[in-house]
Amino acid sequence: MGLLSSIFGSKTEGGHGDSAAYKPLYDWLGTDMHNHVLPGIDDGSPDVETSLEFLRRYHKLGFRQVVASPHMRFPQFENSNDKIRAAYELLENAPGRNEIPVKLAYSAEYYLDERFLELLERDMLLPFGGNYILTELSLGHRSFLDLDQVAQRMFDKGLRPILAHPERYLYWSKSMETFQKLKSRGWLLQINLMSVLGYYGKVEQRTANYLLDEDIVDFVGTDIHKEKHFDVIAGIDDKILQKLKSKYLINNLFTI
Ligand SMILES: [Fe+2]
Image (cartoon, rainbow, N blue to C red; front, side, top):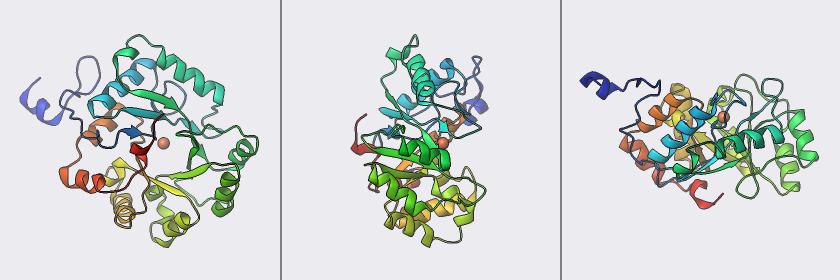
């Protein structure tokens, strides 16, 4: 590898980016509970080899536990509990998996719609860490659901609702009181690491920082879909890392 490619990173002959320089920057965080590591069931890892490479990178970056959260969103991602479990087992039983010291469990990232409410009513959701459920909204338009009522229905089932990447819902970017309201109604908030790093854009970065400064962030997730996303989080600067480290996060408070 030439000097420039060692500085700026490059593709190896195997097609994977260079992760040799990764440091265990996230050992203090320990757990990633939002990612698309399971092979072939959503817009994340396409196959088992890539999933194994994801897990190797998690290990290099200091993560010890990974809760896979494939999209459960119809009609784009017609996943079922059986399909998710099969993908998980395929990865867990893959040759070489035992050599990667990262614990893996599975849950899902549920799109909030009528189908979700149906799964909730039929007790068919897949919680993690005991009773957490990760949910997401449309990036493009406001939900027609009453989120207070959704949270209440989840509480009634003994579940603890998490809203994924609130900073990415740009229709809320000028109404910061929305986040405080969600918190006061019992929603736990999960920001994406890459939002804090400016990967999606300035607005997402600003909102994520606002949520951190207000101390209303409960989880930090990677939302990793591709190998190159590991390079993004590996590039975190020390100032941002120290800010994240100073926060009270649930990530490192449970075992899977
Ligand atoms: Fe996601």
